[in-house]
Length: 159
Image 1 (cartoon, rainbow, N blue to C red):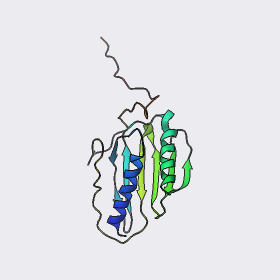
Image 2: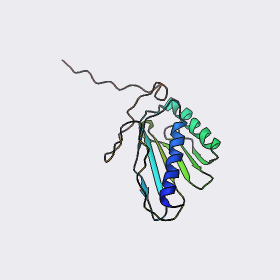
Image 3: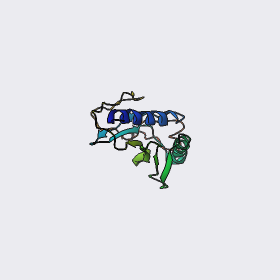
Image 4: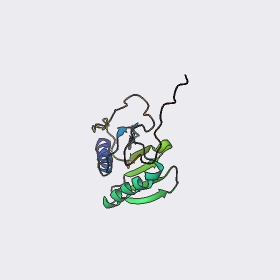
């Protein structure tokens, strides 16, 4: 397997994981990178994952990863910043980290493979692409995943 094939396999792992989440969340490609023999692919979820739904969100992902044959080798059970870390049977590392404001980030790290050029991912985000600009904090509300999170409202202007 070369780096391009490893990148494509990583993209498939991410595609399948995001497709397993129901209701669907909006995501964008995050910064991808490649080393001398490995590739890292990242996707950031733009849907707000409320504190009340984080356990459910991680549970959906964990069940899918186990069903896919991934070994869950670490779980960070932090109320504010929980995370899951797993490895596929082929040696690809995959993680889900809940960051500030409930922003979920997925990352796949490949094992060392044959060196090659690596093209950008071909999967289209299901929302804005944010190419060349910083991805914002989660800003998409979901009736399910964002439940319990207060909606920010504009401050009324004083007369």
